[in-house]
Length: 312
Ligand code: SER
Image (tube, rainbow, N blue to C red; front, side, top):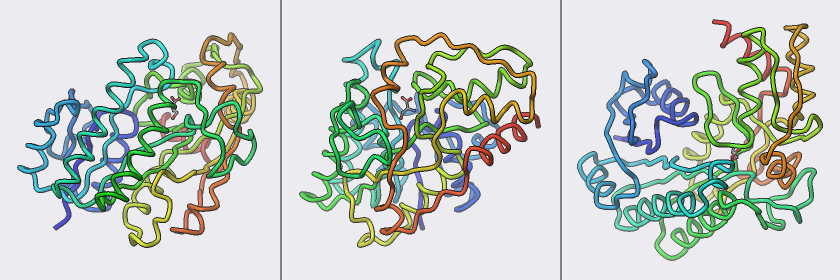
């Protein structure tokens, strides 16, 4: 029987992934773990384990006791917060990943998922339709940790046969919880301000386009990649993944189609520099051809889905 453990389950992605997996595999097949419990009632239908992923012995004990087959290791300090605490970001992101990979090397789990990001790219990568294999010269500690993590995943796959799979997520937009510490977070905040009838103070420049993805697409991509036959998963660093791409002003225009009074003002801060170093859009040909990826949500679909869900 498959047993799925999500580590870092109380964050923006974890909450959605838990619920997506509860729907697909059943509540009892999915266990969440984190250093704090989420307050999402749906997530909390399942079992929760208190776990600090930087403690290797604690990770090993949870895997041994729980007899998990699949681990989704989502723990990370994101781009903006990482720039405030570079060494802490590096330490958290790398130590926790290596702890999980070491346990997988011991055979304590069959498959590992680990998220990478568009943050692996830097100023020298082409901005549009950024290819799978191009310059990865990130300017943030988060991006550096993702490039290093991708190479560690490939190393554990090639040297020890660890079946670890990964996606380079765009900015993720979901309605169940808010992100924290990232550069793409503005796009979630915009919806809350719009529905509160408040002016939105955006920390990016109005024309700063970034790759983005609605959460349903992200969860579907994650689970489809994990279910793909091993021989189809040819990229063992991390797959480029594309949903849609938009700038703050394009997002505001789209929201205004439903909420005509919505107003955005632009006051770029340090996060603008991070955003400027990332691609505008992503080429995900390999994900499409290797395991049949196809995004469903464009900007219109994403905005409609977010407004509908948040109103509810
Ligand atoms: N959403 C992340 C961030 O903004 C990028 O993966 O840091």
